[in-house]
Image 1 (tube, rainbow, N blue to C red):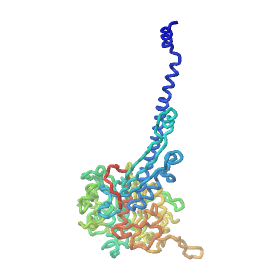
Image 2 (image 1 turned 180 degrees about the vertical axis):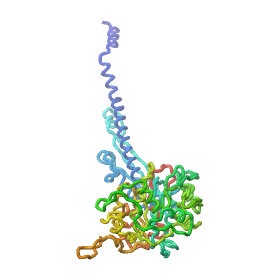
Image 3 (image 1 turned 90 degrees about the vertical axis):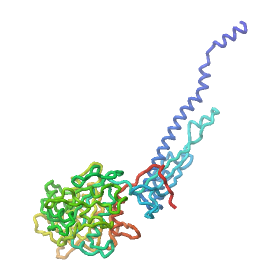
Length: 535
């Protein structure tokens, strides 16, 4: 065999070629597979890091405007080792370094937010940044083939959130104001210079100035039909107690007249159906006819969104509220005005209106007003809207005009009854809250003691009090202690939240401002927004 023939046979022989190619492709195949696995793992870790960063920013924003509280909450809800979102993937032993978290309170400029520039808050936003380093698994294993791969991947996430004040509802709000005789008294300057009912109405004006009548960004909410505009966001209804003679509220409370509606004795002239028992506080069943009877006695204005002309009116106008000239025939109004009923723009220095007045002559029994407000909200539910009741009272339920001999009353103290009137309010409130409605309570002029109807005589005819007081009753009506307030003129009530505005603590203006703020939501914003860290 010649040398040339041998070489030709050698080059034609393909045995072993596959093995050679496999030897060459194994590192490449492992590299591609490792890249997919490691990138997938890094993606999962990145998602966990971003979700925890968003959660930390939201938790921190909920604690603003106090920077130290925001930092504490942001850290607690972060992904750092030992925190509430400390995913195992992001911390040792799987990660090369624990998550590093930085929570920075600061200031942004956004419509609706309390502004740092005005000196009202120290911070209105927060920025959270988190970083960690996670290992690769397959890529770094390529070193056995002499290929240098990445040993780790550094991940980072950033989120910015703003405090409550810029995003709201939608809400259906029932505002329930006490107009019994005690509200005729002078406030004495603790909250305003006027009667207590006038001060309470000015608190209501603050709520209306803060609520959103229609969608943000609309320069005009448009024409209102029966008190409501298209694209309504927050609708507000006004209730009062004591109950009033049907057909007298609109003519006198909304039309800026000096006449007062005619009050009626408790209970209301209606059949309540199956009533709630104090041992099992569930809402009574009630017919539409009976509800309409109750509304004619307790409701001043139905749910309305015509209280401002736009969602930006408060920021752009000196007198933000929108009073209406009531054109009515008899006692009806085609476009009800809650603004007129709460005194116009008097809190803001604009034109006032007589509004609701404290009639006197009938003592406090607020279980009926709470019950009616809840039944109305339930019957008027809107998709995506949450129900809220805001109750202002001195808390001392003592509807002395209720006759225990009336066939409309229950003898066992369940609603409606002449006895255990504070407990009835607590029972009705429990059912309201169980139905998903939030209750904010404003104690105004609350005195020590109270609840004189709550108790019974023992076998020796000695009166045994239930131990309920005005303070404890109002506290139990509220959804929780953060939604229970008493003004500066009240006796000190255990559990009440404390709020300060413009250097004044627990004034009605500060309380109603706090309630309006609580009904907004902290939310995430773009990281591109101009952000200045607080000092």
